[in-house]
Amino acid sequence: MKKIILLFSVLGLLAACSDEPATGVDPQNKTEVVRSMDFAAISRGGQLFQQNCAVCHGQQAQGLSENWRQADQEGKLPPPPLNGTAHAWHHPKRVLVSTIKNGTAKLGGNMPGWEGKLNDAEINSIIAWFQSKWSDEIYAAWYKRDQEFK
Image 1 (cartoon, rainbow, N blue to C red):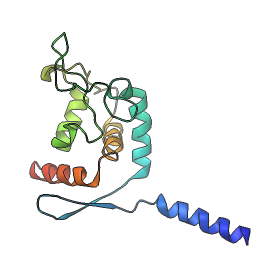
Image 2: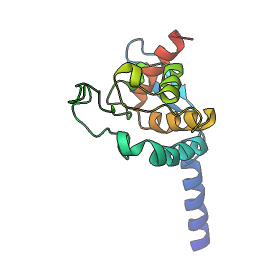
Image 3: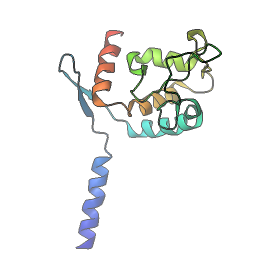
Image 4: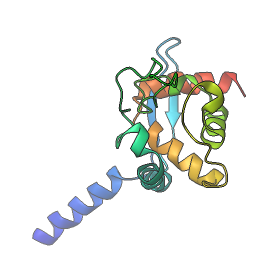
């Protein structure tokens, strides 16, 4: 009996960790958006984020400053939260990738460019990781914007 219970417990855990898509509803037009959850990419992205990004953006992409919209004493904008509570979701994926590759010096920030240090797959994994922190509603709004800019 214990083996059967253990078997079902393991199967339940595996089902919870599947690559089944999550859904969200775009709040403006009430259409359903399905998002793929590539858990391997998200896991890699989380590791890469911790190694390269967390020192500025926080361990959970929450940002380190409540005043991320206000320039500091040097006139530079602090790193924003990337967890869906700031403006990252306003940008299409190509802009997110470009910002990571090229940094934010031209935009008034301090982030260095990561091109040559992170490859495209690594950058995409990092984006997948911080997007996994977004609510379904935020993701749906981002997805709509992203589709408009393709």
